[in-house]
Length: 224
Image (cartoon, rainbow, N blue to C red):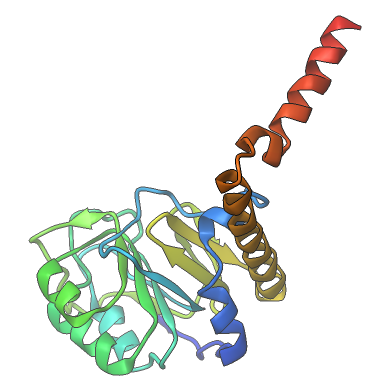
């Protein structure tokens, strides 16, 4: 059985510019949820994307729904593929990557495996997945779902959720919280630049970060 739903809204270009400046690892300093399993790794170095999730649930050996999704994707979309626990059959390879390149999507995240990694890298399509396999899905026409809530890397992802991903990991944000999270992360990153200058001027990191003060307070409590 197949389920086909409409695409979610696209993101404002101004917001996307903020998203790609925000590092998931910085967001991880103040947020503890929405992060995908770190086993889903970037297949290219020095990459960061931000965009709306377009979700696909592609069970087992049937990759028909992924083919359908390729005809729907828009520039800036992030294709998120729930493989329903299948880590053997690759639902993404060279020709699919080329189609994604032509569609100018932001990137692809798969809770499963991919193939043709050399071609994927050649075409410059940012890809996150659990690994590689030479065994692929087939166009069988049995089942699949497009733009439905899915699970990817242990995180519930709804169509239109905001994705920020780089080499360190993937975070999924509700649309209403994405801009504030990105702005907070960017502020922290700017503050880190100032901290580096203070280190260059001879200050110690625990004094700058507050670790020294926290330890002193903890020791004072131990004595009392």
